Length: 252
Ligand SMILES: *[C@@H]1O[C@H](CO)[C@@H](O)[C@H](O)[C@H]1NC(C)=O
Ligand SMILES: *[C@@H]1O[C@H](CO)[C@@H](O)[C@H](O)[C@H]1NC(C)=O
Image (cartoon, rainbow, N blue to C red; front, side, top):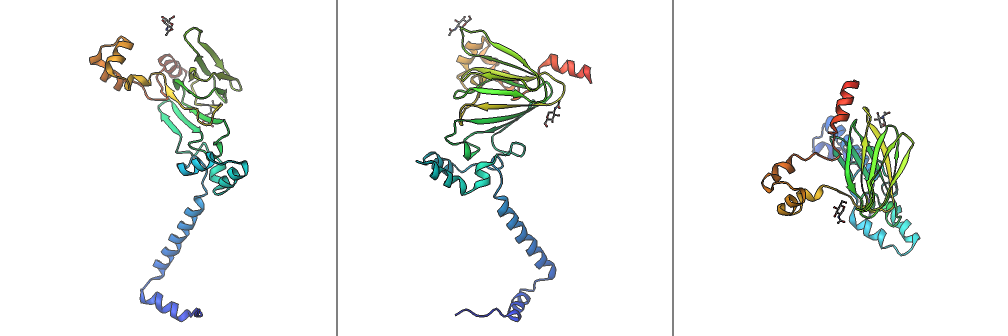
């Protein structure tokens, strides 16, 4: 049997714990924060890691209806990616901040065959030569001039273009390519990819990963000096294209 709520009894309980008004207010604030945190759970993709189990379920959905039902379980997080507040899929270096919305960071991309990158590049910032093994990339310069180049294979010449704001170019799948902010102000470019899981690695990444003897032989560099050479390698994206830095120093 349910007992009717007896306010005097509640008061007794509160009093017997000797809660001050201040403590009660603190509790209310605390509960409020918990409620807010709960609704914040409805954060956007990019703001917290994706549960791998969700990705597996989406990938395994046999019909579009089942796929959509899975997405709907956390609709905002699963279908809205926020590039500016993202903390996952983010690569930060002295030359800028790259944010990747891929299937790994944005559930709605599973099985779509597309993904996107937002790149904020510092003045003279260089997104050094790198490769996406599973996607072609189409990039558009938004508000500064970028030098963009790619190279497809040994038998071809590299293609290097200067992109003014509004210009776009394409990097074929598997090509090694770079983007360089030639300006003395920060700039943004956006890259669309032809795979939800494009993959990425820097062209020089092997230097710190393959056996030193192989690396030294490849570079024609003394094996003994490799350690300090590797420690001296720039970050990614980097900011050390000397002639640009000199030009911008003169310009300001
Ligand atoms: C690639 O091109 C260079 C320069 O033309 C040549 O020396 C080298 O043998 C080529 N390598 C391969 C793997 O084809
Ligand atoms: C380009 O856009 C970014 C991000 O909004 C901004 O920080 C930057 O100052 C802009 N650059 C120019 C040259 O307008």
